[in-house]
Image (cartoon, rainbow over all chains, first blue to last red; front, side):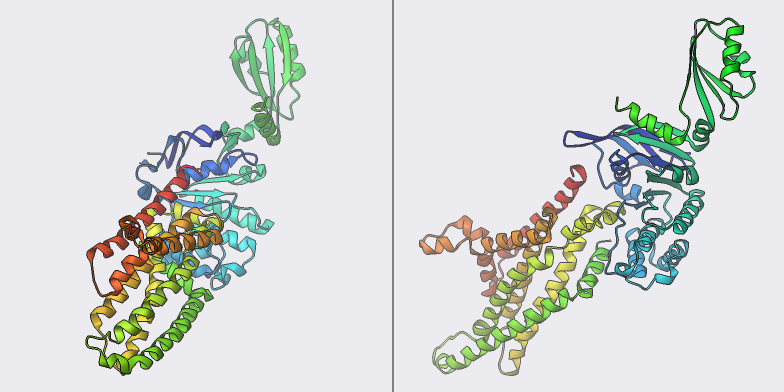
Length: 308
Length: 250
């Protein structure tokens, strides 16, 4: 099966400034990929490149196996995009606007009404369908933007900060909707809210200063968070199985014959036992250093590492 | 796809008061000028009757009416075209079109056709007004048709240039001023040649007025028609390039 999105070595320069540097990733069906990054990290630029609004300076984008740059029309047919500012014609009513979008996305005329109706239903827009977009609140405008991006049932949905400006209940609804959509489509969503990624995504990518610094599944991320890690340095190689047998330790990775990363559950205080074990076996303890834990810590540490 | 965009744009022109007020104002001014022209004709009618091969009402009333309409449209078209691409970019709605499965050509031509639609309405109304002369006399329909075609081609050229400037400018007023200035320059560019009593072929060829007047005289020359067609094509292609360039550069 081909990946829905295959981005290969994407780079983008604005003049001499590099906004995105050598970013590669894949998105498969049924995945919800959260794109995390600080302001100005390159999230929006990457998304604009994926949607064909911006041509990459270097690299290749395949959507459903079709090259976005060579065959933009065919490739874009499988795309739904919500930019950071929802693109709305404010002098139209919700219904008229969605109809126009459906036509733009080549939904056949006889299926338009049905598609628009379904999108309105999914985004809770039925009560306002005949109102002018201009008169709607920001939250509703955001929903119209989301409706616009899903109404032609695209394989790939790209949402740039979809929950900005919504109240907490609406945010819950939208997250629910995203999860539901994620079962049959591939979704990329960008945000700078960490908990949002934890709640709605299956995979996470952290981008900083134009570079991808972490690609991880949400399970992997949770493991990073629920477990603590210790960096262990010894003079002699250790027996990994002996360490693993210690109560509370979940995994041991060898970085080199003298350096190991030990994962363990937060609750179990294993530092003492670990040290005792190393001493007992006379492996020559040199250093024992605790590593980061919370998602914020991971995020901050990853983004600050690249600064230094 | 082109027609989907064009229809939406055309409808939204009529959703705002803009199209209606433009139509009303132009119609009012033209009607006034039309009546003064008829008055002039009435005053000279007895003298004209004595000349053999005297100019008819088509030359005395219809041609000046279309010239006046051309000058008014020179002022108005930049106001109609200024918002087309510029406003989309300012409101960030251009991304909707760019991320949809459309080519830039579809976008530009769609926008262009919507403006042409409105301009065609104005031209048709001018044509209808001159047909009112049929109540009291006869028209030379060949010339009438040439005038109509000339005005349509001329406004199509105005719109193409206006659209291009709208794709360049960051603010609608800049697009309007820019396209108005350029159009006026192209309108008057061969006046200097006339003053010094030496005609420059190049300037004469560039001048829009020159080609328009040729058509107005009832001479349907392919050279003049081609001038306008080339003019429109050039600026439309430039607009398409400009949008493509934006995707690359930004």
